[in-house]
Structures are given as C-alpha cells and as structure tokens.
Image (cartoon, rainbow, N blue to C red; front, side, top):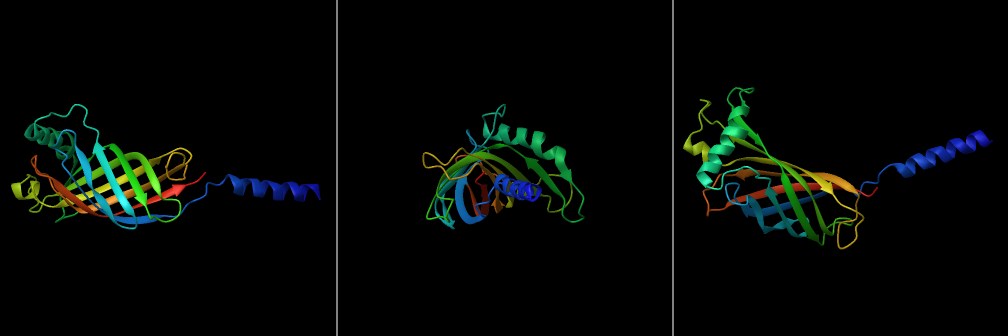
Length: 199
C-alpha cells in the first residue's frame, strides 16, 4: 500500500514541477527604424492585431562605425559577405545574424500576455541575390528582403506590470526589410508570436 502511495505522490510531484505553458499568443505589428542609424532602433509603431500596444528593439552595435555608409560596408563585410548561401539553385542569398534586446507592451491581449516583457532578440536578415551572380547589386541592396528574429523571454515574477511568466520564447517575421540611408526609415510589418511559461 505504501509503495503505491509513494508512486502516486511521485507522479503528482513530477507533474507539479513541469512548467505550465500560458499558450501561444499571435499578433501582427508595424514598426519603423533603421539598422544603419545610431542607435540601430526599430519601434515608433504599434501592434495591429492580437492586442493593443507596441513592440520595439535595438541591435547590439558595439564596434560599428557611426557613419551610415561606413556602417553598411562594415555590416556587409562582417555579417553578410562571409555567409553567401548557394545551397538552392535560383535562390542564392546572403544571410546576416545579429543580436539585440526587445520590449513588448500589450493591453487587451489573451490572459497571461497583458503588461510588458523584455528579452533578447536574434534577428536574421536574408538578402536575396536575384540574379545569382555573387555580387550585391543596387536593386538587391535597396530591395525588400527577409527579416526573421528569434525572441528569448527574460522576466521575473509578473510584478510591476510585467507579464506573468518565468521565461518564454517567440519570433518576429517580415518580408519587407530594406536597407535605408538615414534619415529615411525602414518599415517592418507582418506577424509575430510569443509563448510564455509560468514555472
């Protein structure tokens, strides 16, 4: 009898230790910014569906030149040019991966997602080599390219208006990333998601 009791108690304890998932939250957004600006910031926009609020993020730019043209040349030589991908014929591309931090503020969102949250963002920018010639043409440089970012949620205990969670993850995506020369702003819009854990 005791053996069966301890087995049941062990199962219950194990279940209690499994982190609870709040449930994925999907949203759309529209923000403005420029990776060539100082600082390289995106924001000044809003969530356009899934909740009221906003999202913003900035790239980590330690060591980047301040002049926009020099900054682009630096980014291209350090992040993109070494990562030229010819795996798929007819879909050659340069891929640059960055790091930064993000902030989301949401109201009228699903339960568990109201308030603010912050964390790390890892954006990957794909620049398509439309003519597959291995050279960055002006139309490719200034064209619309793919933006795909991973979000890692860093939060505490839901106090002070923070979303009620311990940790989580998510993503942002846009097919409309473009390099712009400051003071012109790029517009990112499309969808995103966030999944939070309460334990």
